[in-house]
Length: 341
Image 1 (spheres, rainbow, N blue to C red):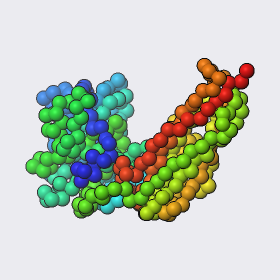
Image 2 (tube, rainbow, N blue to C red):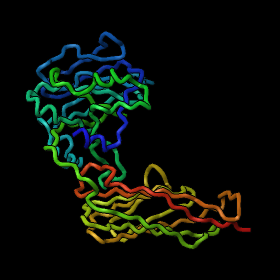
Image 3 (cartoon, rainbow, N blue to C red):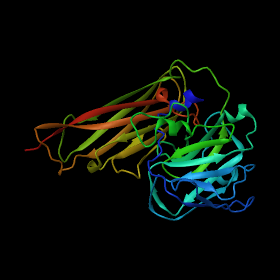
Image 4 (cartoon, helix red, strand yellow):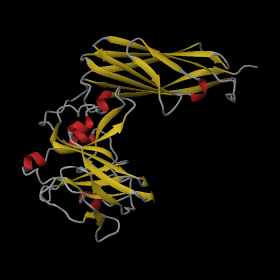
């Protein structure tokens, strides 16, 4: 499981300042729990901990700008009926799904510690993984489950929010039945059991190519430019889901369409185009057409200038697969703009 998690490219950090907050549980199966500062005001511990009960035993907030009540509820599977399925092979453990919310204004990384006494088998405990439901515009559903468990080897020398020893102290611990998640935000957490280990593939399940072009070349200021992007599955495997993201100049008023699936403009940026191409069998090609008009307000320092666009394609054997470096393709392509006299 560690090698699978390492492929996610996650930077698991804990902020330097952990501020106290108040936490309650609204689960109908248990009484509300208040968490109070422990030996350090940087930590929270349960006021009346129940070591035989699954739940959130400690919360630390990275940075606190405005205090507010924080609470969690055990919502179970019924609480995430509209969410996408868990990643391929993972199954929910003991119906443990929690919604954690706060009225406080926070930033940085948040630390959430789960107490799981029901995981009384060390083999099962070693396969537990915490997933966090997050906004994901590269997913057709708009959401995806992201693995957020602190794992061995996850400490990064380029960050200094915590020491290596402090980070290692957060690793899953069967003796205490404790497992920790690190996230930017609170929200919905699910405790899942990992699939049985399988031999790691020596390469990608299939190969994709992206071939972009622009017309006209060069395009004059004030004129329309068309970017044509060919997304090719060169085989040997079929992809059940292919998603595209293009970063273009927001001032050029781009729109996008595709030969299959659908395209839309990102809510985050008017220059970001998203296309959900669906399934692509081996040796198939999808065509994405992005049309914009070069703004007359663009400032050119020479007769012909180059503008860069960033493209990303994500492809999966199964729609619920976690994405690793074998299922992503990034590239930049430039187009030329002619300065009118």
